[in-house]
Image (cartoon, rainbow, N blue to C red; front, side, top):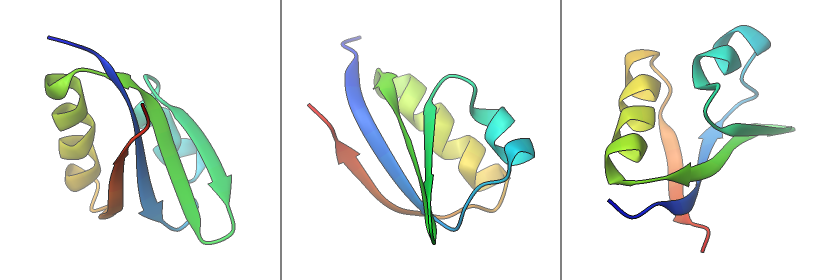
Length: 66
């Protein structure tokens, strides 16, 4: 599968503890939101989104960063 760069924006600042669940992406924290970014194929992207869901974190938007 082809890898693409993605940005997933979530509401709120993820703590270091929650952020550690996403070691395969870069976290950019700013007031009121956190952006998870990195390269992923479709399966990896779905895995990150599933992990967010498991933790009760709802993505505000998913952007193709290419």
